[in-house]
Length: 177
Length: 90
Image (tube, rainbow over all chains, first blue to last red; front, side):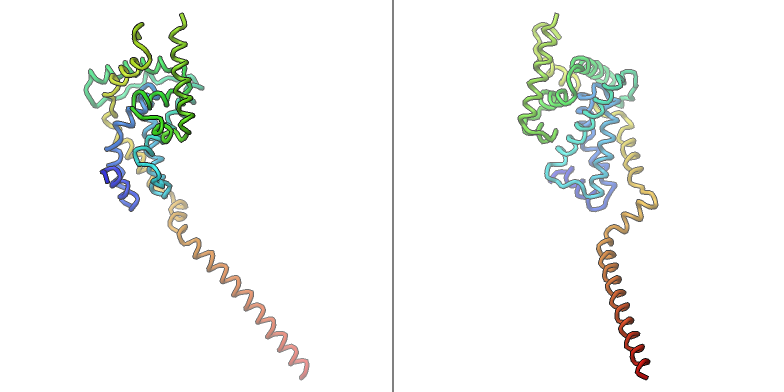
């Protein structure tokens, strides 16, 4: 059993401080995933923080049934949170481009990543958030369709449909003069 | 995107460029603060969490108490009826 599952065991046994280990073991991947879906780091951190609070609540009241791995479960909470947040932000036409995040890591890499996130956000802006999430999970996170279906809580057919539609939308946009 | 760059190539390039994304310096502390705020329940929430495991036992005890009260009430009625009857005979 890996460190993450052991930390979950400890939280389930009442050692709430062990939740810090779960955060330490997963926050980098989850913030990166959130940033790729949301298009910026500030929104991603808000979504991931909310996901951790939901996860903690679920662990402490016994709502995590362990039918999927902890990692897949956390991915699911973050993806659902990001899809909802992206939808509501799109409805309100909001953007967080001006929100400054204290990087805490290499400045040059941060600047490059920030530019790349802005490019990604602009490129995928026309896609519905569920199609965008499916595309990010497949092409940037390296998940296969079965794993994406587990994370998004839909059938593999629905995943395939979202990916085909997302690619078609990007292709048609590119072909427009 | 250049003319030669297709969708998958562009996604792969942006995946590489965003791979360095990591949480900001204060992120873990902010998360744990939010989690701790979640972990400190209010009085009623605390009372509910403390007592909810005893609910089935309390429900059974309440049902037994009602059954016992009904039984006692009937037996008192029977005894009173018997005593009124005996008073009548006297």
